[in-house]
Length: 249
Image (tube, rainbow, N blue to C red; front, side):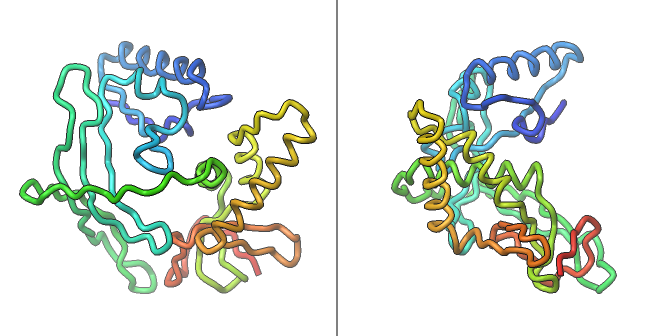
């Protein structure tokens, strides 16, 4: 079995919303599986809500033999999760539907230099528990949905671990211009004039930043005027030894 984590990071796609680009990636994955006679498991993400389907072009779902969905009900402001469950969202030759709820159980692997425990989570199926249906949420504006996607891609590809104001919590942050560049690639305005399109994208990005200011705060580094952005869910106030951190004072 080969696991691709994630397809967006594995393939050099010009635009994951274009089905022609998606089809190329799917053909390469099929060729890979046929070459060694095994299973290829690409990891992909849903859009902002499960109702929007897999992120990007519709060919991601259409080209898959099976889609296993790991879903949960997450509160966007405080980040607690409930209703963790596994579902068979698509199967060419099987019955689709929920499989089982599950829980994530922390397993300690050791302690760091400060004596704090570190480890990972293991999946514990809860076959006897009832399935929890996530609450339906109002569809958010395209600009907000695009902003979240842009931040995820930017921090995955160009993010750094920094300390806020030099001595604050350690966070995985990314430069705001990098998020803006990802946003502009995804946010379609329908405007043919380049200047008008750029202006609409600028306003949409700033509006999204304001709407997400509590969840995605920013900080400008004094020495270089670099503006950083991070997710409040990534703050690690007790972390003191990070091998890849970029200390900013």
